[in-house]
Structures are given as C-alpha cells and as structure tokens.
Length: 188
Image (tube, rainbow, N blue to C red; front, side, top):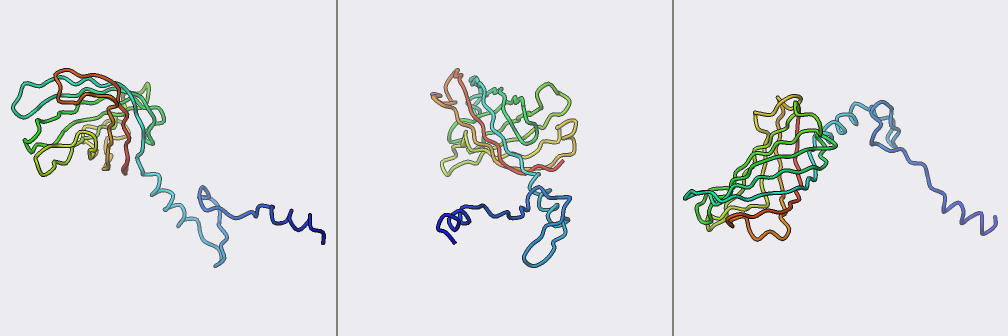
C-alpha cells in the first residue's frame, strides 16, 4: 500500500447517521434500530422554543407620578421563531428608583403584514435590594389578550433590551434605537 492511498483514506469523511430532521425514518444505532416516535417527541419539544432578535426605535416620555418615572414606547422589526419577519410594538412603564415597584410592560409581536395573529407578552422586571428595578433584563409570559393562532398560547422566558448610547430612561424625553433578544418557551 502506498503512502498516498493511506493518507487519502484518513481524509475521507465517514458517513454517520444524523438524528435531527429524521422524523419519518428509522435511525440505525449501535444498539439496534430506534423508532422515530422517540426522536419526533424530542424534535417537537425543541420546536417550542421562542427566540428572536428585534431592533427598532424607542421614545421615553416622562410620567407625572410619584411611582412612575417614564413610559417607553418601542417599535421595531426583526425575526422570531414565532414569525420569520416580525413587527414589534410595546409600552414599558419604568418606575422611580427606590420605590420597590418593578418595570412593567406589554409587547405585541405579529408577522409582517398580518395583524390578526398577535403574540402579546406581559413583561416585568426584578427589583434589587435598594428597590430599584432593572430596565434591560426582563421576564415575560404570554398575555391572555393574544389573538389568532396565539389565542390559547402559553409560555414564559426572558427579554434583554439594549439601548445603545441612551442617556437613561429616567430623563424627561429620550429617544433612540434599541435591540431586543427574546428567549423562552411557547406552546400554541
């Protein structure tokens, strides 16, 4: 056997059976044959993940209240696993620091051009030991006011909002751009 033929065998890629995307086929394994119903359930559970990235603009308006510092209106476009091209709109109420009240809000995500199917997410923040809420790391759960294919949806997760170069959401009137990352689980 020549040296060249031996090295070419080492470079050859072995064909290994893949598990993902084989819902309608049998998968061979070292232990024998595995029926696809097991694989199908694992694949189905993975499809319930809700992830997405949305970017757009925000406007922070001052609120005249002892509790609320500002109301942030956001709107943007992006991609989520709920809809490839998504339109997002929402309102986030930011409380004054030290009140012990969490940041609260409502987001609406809909496929571009389809206002009948709206996934509405109720969002809230945690409050630190000094009573100050977080404004960028939030939690979400599906709101019962969701419509269309999301009418009976359930789920929960986290939202991370980044406001690049924003002077703070407690200012009188601030505007700019935001980026939002969604993660969680969603069942329809």
